[in-house]
Image (cartoon, rainbow, N blue to C red; front, side, top):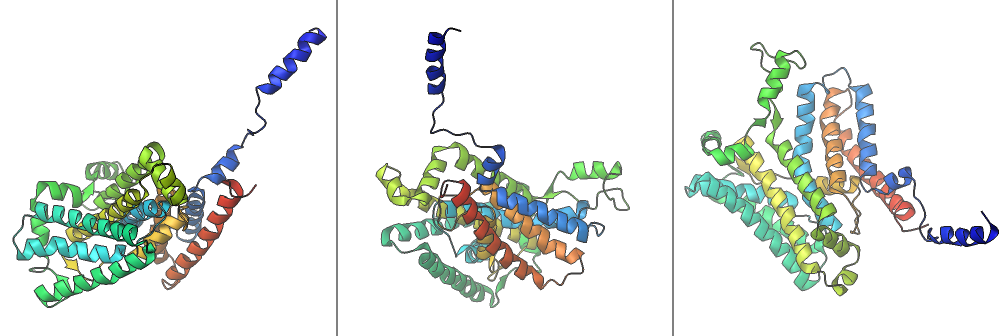
Length: 383
């Protein structure tokens, strides 16, 4: 190549590479993912219990179903908590909403004679309406979500207790040893399909007959399938992840939590986005309540106690920042798995169950420190 051609080629080649763009390695990209900490924590917890309880039955088919059920119930709440936190708010009334939603289902059925399907619809719509009230008050008053939802925490818990005592004189609403409500739910084909029993029972039985998992004396699997709570958890997590990652609404949620004023300036309806996320959180709490009522055959005023804190912790472990604008529904699902494994796994070891809450506090503290560091170091806060 002659000198003139070479001289003109080199600037052209250099101009193709923008000096403002630098390549980022795969490990750095992985660290910048909000769910990385929860994934790493899940692997660590698996390893710990694999050593401490590997031969105890924790990881056979029955043991897996046990801790997946706990993770599934919490994971349903964690989906709503994560999306609301990403939008820059959080809801302390989730636990009270579970108890009150159970009352909205049980009272119309047992005392007013409503069909179970109508009562379930009333429960879900009523919960979402209360979530809308939370968001509306937040938008109209400018008060912090901590104050508004703390007020609803007491209001809903008090209403649950008052209504339960008014109708039954007790804090639990049931009839004939819980048989009536459970039977009514089982008789409705739609409600029983959505909220009662397990899925893939036939697959589990086939695996048991083939000798892959434990079977009872009749040859059926001891683990009778995947609980409906786990199916709801997976479905809601998939919907939430798709919404955040693939839709305009997901961009609005992230923008509203990251900088509400800037989001307003570019035309994003921040108030409506946040109100919608309060409704999603309330819907998740109502789904939790319906699953519990379908399983227990009763409603109780004290259901959902402290579940709001567990849902927030699962979301924080999953990478959600308390300041909003960053997080992952997938990460919150891993956070729920950690909860389920620890809560059930401790029973498979010689560790005292009293250490469970200590572990939760430590996990919350470690997750907050780690997420803040990763956010600052790898996601643009500090170079």
